Length: 204
Image 1 (spheres, one colour):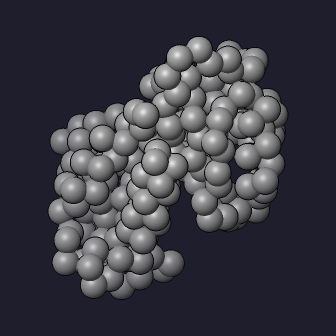
Image 2 (cartoon, rainbow, N blue to C red; image 1 turned 180 degrees about the vertical axis):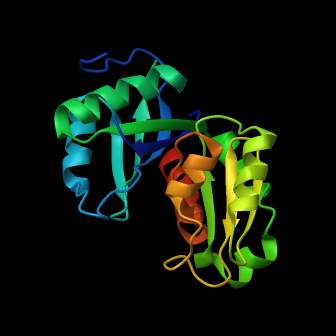
């Protein structure tokens, strides 16, 4: 079974999905879920995806991570479909980002901060991006960092290490999105590995 990773980002066609042939497994992340007053029950998300015809739906953690199988829809088509359906069914505006499992495995392998991942994984974030950021925008983000945070852009992902903690850092998702001029969402390294493991387990 081919695997795909999906990321869902807050903001913001229709109809039930019907499958004929191979099913592709996806893992999704929703941005800004259950923080800042933006509440979404994972049980509701699971029920909605199942009602749309997605298979093997399983939510992971309360921050908005979900694994599910999809048929023909993938890539940008799947992104647009889910954006529209999640907003229509759950009244929750979302941007959706998709990666294949091979791409996500490559993201894990390409981590430019292996020591930090081993010693301080909760302060290392991976932020999937809508597209590859320009070198100019990455430089602008780097210049905007006021603390000891360190970033590296690799393809459509941004890796960010927060040695002094994330909660009080000025390097927020809002700043990253503004400087890179695109939507993104982040998960710490512990969650990145949990999602990868969950996807592999469902693929067995």
